[in-house]
Image 1: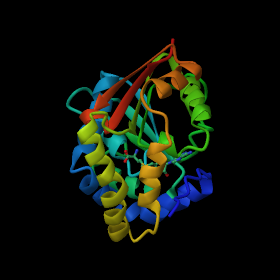
Image 2: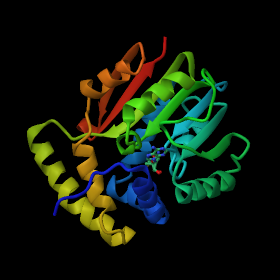
Image 3: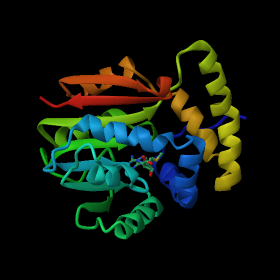
Length: 239
Ligand SMILES: C[S@@+](CC[C@H](N)C(=O)[O-])C[C@H]1O[C@@H](n2cnc3c(N)ncnc32)[C@H](O)[C@@H]1O
């Protein structure tokens, strides 16, 4: 079966609305708990000092925003978490409230390609596992650049695939066959977890994406492979 990797915003928002309630469970299950570690790495890379105002675009159920204001490796002062799925935001709001973080995390509905803030508003911006879903990721990266202050940093986490031949074959079998089957069973959504590997394999990784960040205006953009290349962490700086 061919899986549609259409990034039509209405379709993507509908898909995340539909899987929102099972999203966290599946995230932790399908990544064997590694997702928490990957978000910690992104927050650590931003080197917060307690004073930063941060944008978490594609915040989903808010885990990266929460990590940014509670991290033991340095915290942001406040985070604006934005997403275009109201169901994901609804779940994020519940988590933020239960953790008594409403004073430090503000959630709003918005699209990554049109960030509703003035130029230079944020000290840092971050996106976890969201950028590959955006219809025009280059426009989104230009927006992140625009809303950052000079010297501001951007961290992006996105999936890749291991490069080590044996591990790669093993992982790709898991990613293409096991993950969609478990995802379908738990989320009851027909194709969201088939879209996941299909969209990852179609998205640029490593230097290819770092170059796109430079094209969007960032003076430097580097990347690190996490967990053998299952995830890439990009860090870009605005001059
Ligand atoms: C895979 S989830 C990641 C959520 C969260 N960042 C995390 O680490 O678990 C991707 C999120 O990106 C959101 N999203 C995708 N495209 C978007 C866009 N163009 N603008 C805003 N949000 C978007 C989806 O609604 C979804 O909540």
